[in-house]
Length: 283
Image (cartoon, rainbow, N blue to C red; front, side):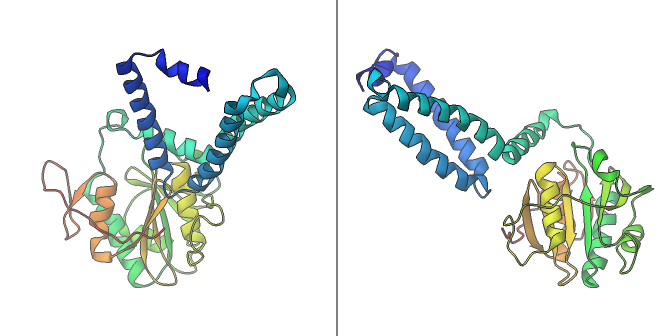
């Protein structure tokens, strides 16, 4: 214990305050990022394990009398480092994606008005008729490897084309569509499913596929439920649902960093005031 506290007394007061402040900020950001994810529960288990290891160290585990226990603890600590990387692999990937989404790292190109309007018109039609749909909109992370198993289209996006793809009994209506810039890159694409337990049981395979893809990339995924016609968005591994039809264009525009008025007309940030969206979120 004397050695432990002597480590802090050797520091200057201002240096200790700065270091503790930075450590607190780092821990706060980590917990904030993990909040609402599967990793949040794992952190509690690791916290208990680390507390036990620290307690053993403080009661004299480093003395020669406990050499065998010291060897086991050092071995366990080495395994913990590996387990952290394996267990938190999805969260680490998501963190790297979010860092890559920083404004100063993003390209300056914004989606155009016709782009949002085409998707909004198609989704409104599909929702009213309860036709299921799954549309992934690329951002900075390309989905080239994912679309290889689908049907390549490379067609200019339009509401009628999206409606025809997801029309019941269409050969491509069961799987997903990938949109790149203002073109439909591919249809009939199988998205990776989120793990069991990620979503409540009331959500089906479309929602699991949307959240799974949104976890592994920075794309925005639009979902229309075939059973209820409810519209949802999956972004950053989280599901935003339900989204009212009359507000969908505004929510999608804001998600893609555009500003869209309530009538569904998209506009650039320097041409129109900001529109707030308050869709009800479901975990």
